Amino acid sequence: MQLATSGKTSRATSKRDALHPTRRRAAHGLAEADIVNRRFDRRYVNLMKDLIARTRTLFAEGAPLAKMVGLSTQHRSRYVQSRGLAVLDAIEASGYDTLHASSA
Image 1 (cartoon, rainbow, N blue to C red):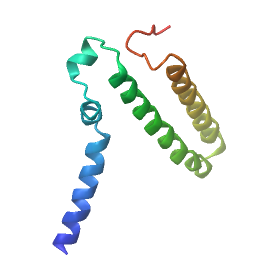
Image 2: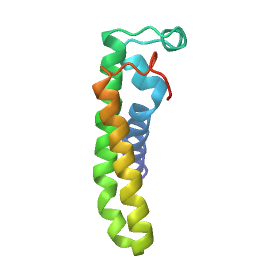
Image 3: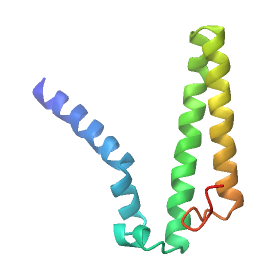
Image 4: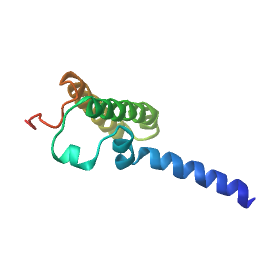
């Protein structure tokens, strides 16, 4: 029993670690200094593509949950999702350069 639990814990920890921003950044060969110094290169583009794909997946997985709440909350949930997807679209349209984009 303990061995089975240990395996489940290990998989859960491994999955959580893969989602950790520092580990994702490092997996793309980026250091914190690269971000701080606004180094925009293919490594950063690949990181952004990875993060955007993951975020789109999370939005898609969460969409059915809106049907489980009241109508008012459903409308708010759809609005938040549509605005979030619009932000992701804008990041893609910018060539993934969020380091130098204005916040306007």
